[in-house]
Structures are given as structure tokens and as C-alpha cells.
Image 1: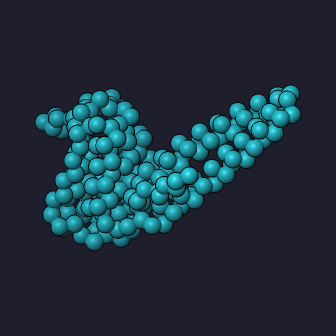
Image 2: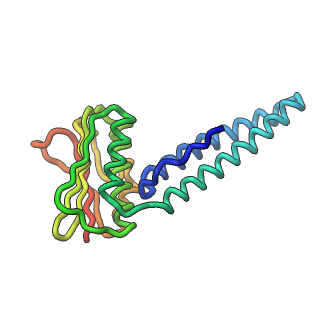
Image 3: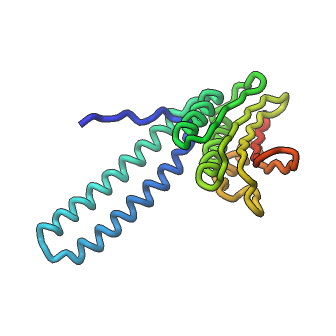
Length: 200
């Protein structure tokens, strides 16, 4: 059997979504298997189901180990991390997407890089799941006293949108490093934009 190497870490970006989604699926499989196991009259079938339960538990442990490994190997190269997320998003969804970098990006510590990368990953995931967008862009700008990241898509703005819907964990990370997340409300701008700011 060929062993595939896990993908390069993106400062933990997407790892929480992977963990949550896979864990929920494994829990569902384990729960349903246990119910069938209790009802199984055939001894051989019952043993097979018990083995399956142990294998599901082992997979769950491996997933957690992978997530921890990805987070531990996070880099502080903000440009490379965001470009990688945008490239993956474009390949996965078929939605036209670009990353734009304005100015010379300052050196940021791991916590700030992780917060911004997490914000981009979650925001693009929302574009994929909840938007009819055909184009998206991520603009990273270096200002004298802050770094900003704006994620724009050409889909319509959701009704009653506000920070916190689907962005809770990303907003929390941004807030921990003194930053903020805001909706760009501009009738002159086509599409829908969410921006994160982090002070330097």
C-alpha cells in the first residue's frame, strides 16, 4: 500500500474544518455500527462489526495526530500560505481566484500569520459553500501600522450578513492579536467583501 504524505501545513488553516468534519463523520459511523452490533444475531457478523469499530477509533486518532502535526509545522510566510490557499481553492472549486499583494509584507509572528491565514481559509470556504460567485480575490496590503486582508467575491451579499456568521473561530483568532473583522458596505463595489485588520 502506498502511503501518501499529508499536504503542507497552512498554519493550521482548514485544519479545524477537516477535524470537525471528519470527526463528525467518524462519530456517525461508529454510532451506527454500535447499534447494528447490538442487534446482530450472527456471531461472526458481530465480531466483524466490533473490529470495524476499533478501526474507526484508530482512524480518528490518526486524524487528530495529522491535525496536530500540520499545526506544529506551520510557517510564518504569510504570502506563501495565502497563495497556497487561493491556488487550492481555485483548483478545487473551479472558481476564478487570485491573490494580490500590495506593498512589502512585514515580518509577522506565528500567531498573526495563523490568524490571517485562518481568516482567508474560512472566508473562501464560505464562498464555496454559500455563494453563487464565479470570481474571488484575496488582497493583502501592508500599511504603516497594520496589515489588512480583504476577501472579495462577485456573488450577492447575503441578507442580514454580519461578522460572526460562519466566521466565529476566525474572528476569535483575529481578536486575540488585537485585530478586527468587518463587512465592506459599498454600493459602488461589485460583489461582497469581508476585511480583516491586524495591528503591527
